[in-house]
Image (cartoon, rainbow, N blue to C red; front, side, top):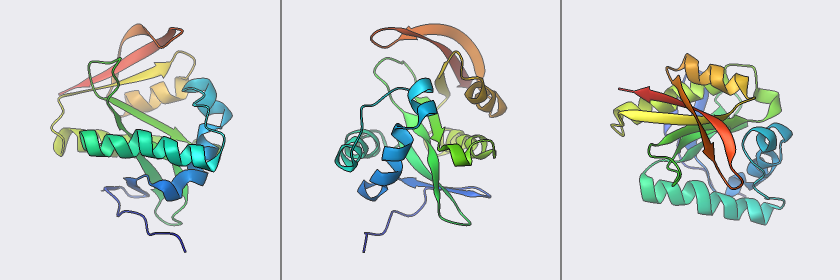
Length: 175
């Protein structure tokens, strides 16, 4: 029997967002190897369950401990199904905290990204007291740009990040 997961941090009409843990390795392995994830975000090189567990520990779990936030697992409340991830990331390449999200193909197009991202942005404002949140988006990723605009972020500028550099769109919300 697997260990119980943490209680949800955020709850919306249809979704519950909770911390990721080692028990979510199978879900993360599928998400990180999804074609759209690799195309729009990056190939993280995670190919096994052990690598997925290590990714969760070194990324989201470390961020919870260091920052008090991170990427949360998004579950559909009615079924408990893991649909995607959404949360805040502190990147060394950005001056501000970044909101991000990714969902498995079966859960795209249902408004879940908008619903989860709105809950995360509201939490950033209220619980965390942030006055600025940004997001970086691949230039071809129009669906994610629409989600960001729907929750109140606005296009600010283009920037080059990464090695090799990739040109991305920067969106921002300011209090």
